[in-house]
Image 1 (tube, rainbow, N blue to C red):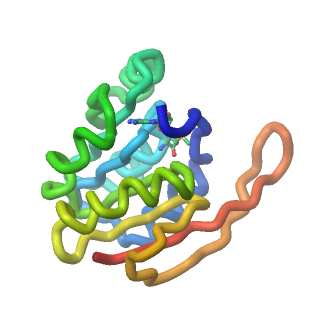
Image 2: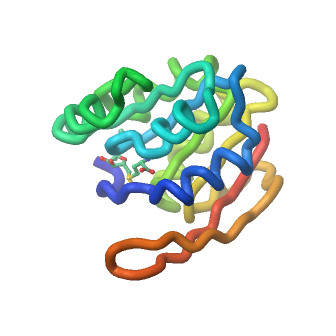
Length: 155
Ligand SMILES: C[S@@+](CC[C@H](N)C(=O)[O-])C[C@H]1O[C@@H](n2cnc3c(N)ncnc32)[C@H](O)[C@@H]1O
C-alpha cells in the first residue's frame, strides 16, 4: 500500500470537482478511492456520466460498495497496474495520495491520459503537470477545521 486511508471531506471533494469543471459528459477516475467520497459527490451533485475508483484495501472496497448506492464503480486492485488501462478512458482524474505516490503516478498519467485530461489533487502536487489553478478550502471536521489546498492541472 502506497498511502494510508484518509477520506477527502465532502466540501473539499466539491471544490475539487468545481475546479476541474466536472459535468454530465465526464468519466471521473479516483486512483486510491478509499470509500469513494469524491466519486459519490461527482455522481450525486455533478451528475457525471461515470465515476470509477481503484482501491487496494479489500475492507475499504467493501465499505465503498456500501457507501455507493450503485452510483459509482469500485475496482479492488493496485492503481499502478490499473492506471494504464483506466486512464485512457477518463476525462477527469482525482487523487488524494502523497508527494511520492504522485511522482510514481505522473509518468503513467502523461503516457496514458487523454489530451485535455483534467486532474484535481487534494493537498499534493504533481511535479511536472501543467498547473491551471490552485484553491484553498477549509473543511469542518469533528476535530475542528482542516485546511486543504487543491491543485488543478490539465494534460
Ligand atoms: C488518502 S486516501 C484517499 C481516499 C479517497 N481518494 C478520498 O479522497 O476520499 C488514499 C487511498 O489510497 C489507497 N491506496 C494506497 N495504495 C494503493 C494502491 N497501490 N492502489 C490502490 N489504492 C491504494 C489507500 O488504501 C487509501 O484508501
